[in-house]
Image (cartoon, rainbow, N blue to C red):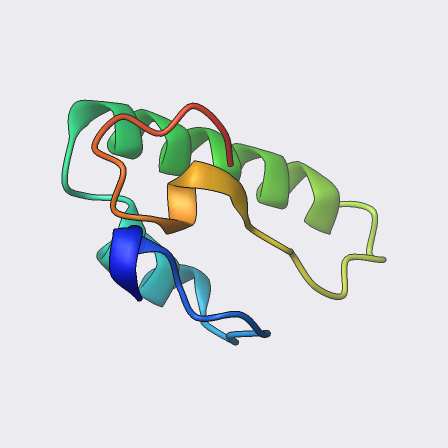
Length: 68
């Protein structure tokens, strides 16, 4: 969509897809995706993780996203 945002709605993706599409184009994005993966790994240890919702400037074309 114009401005680099995803169209409104729910967009299902694997963590690998999120990493490939949003987590590799800058050092900041690589840092954010590594931290997201750590949080997900920690949440998985509870045995109760069902889904992860990612939003904010991370899922846009912002070169230096400030949130995820």
